[in-house]
Image (cartoon, rainbow, N blue to C red; front, side, top):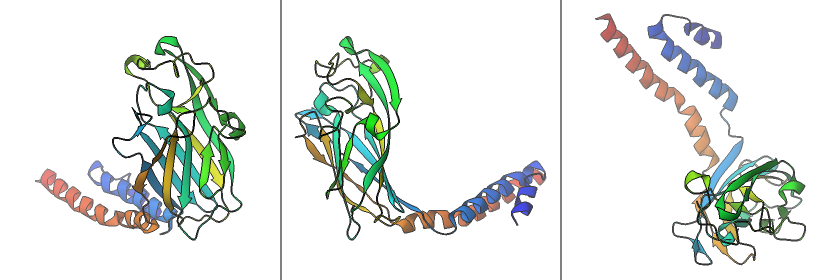
Length: 259
């Protein structure tokens, strides 16, 4: 069947769009196998959140799969004034009955940046190991990623948000610009992989807390949605219905051309 669909892509131009899309749909369905292999959730700080009187804006994209949790932390607060607006920790609780027993951090990845006096920047290297990124994981509960704890890289390697206009941190005060102990920063995002034998693709995240600053006393609970695995199945298996509508539309267009 797949050969037939792919072969239709070589037909006259008026027939190609549907054949190509149908072939793509079949590949997606075969690859998915009607099953989901991971659950995805996004948590963010509520609108108007503050830490130490300064605005903060952060996001965590969390993927759970068989034996693994991947967490991508993002600092979205542009042109910060103080280091208290930089992410320094992240904690999360799994929905019962899943637990973090026997879990450990097995991978980490993050680009770095140095903020100079005056707010100009110097790009750093991309850190590719757990030790280099310097965020320590403890299983808890709750699970905690923390740059300030024992063995962490803090007060450096906090996650800073994007710069202002022209790539300059024009608002940066002395706790950011040219601050030796606080530089380098992780540049806007960091990815962490937790190996967790009791986690499955159906595991969901019950709650999260973002931590900001170098003192560890500026927690902000995150809000978000944990989509059910069935949502992914519905999206994939629902593709043919969209294709039928597309096919009808293409036939109408072909009929118009023939006239």
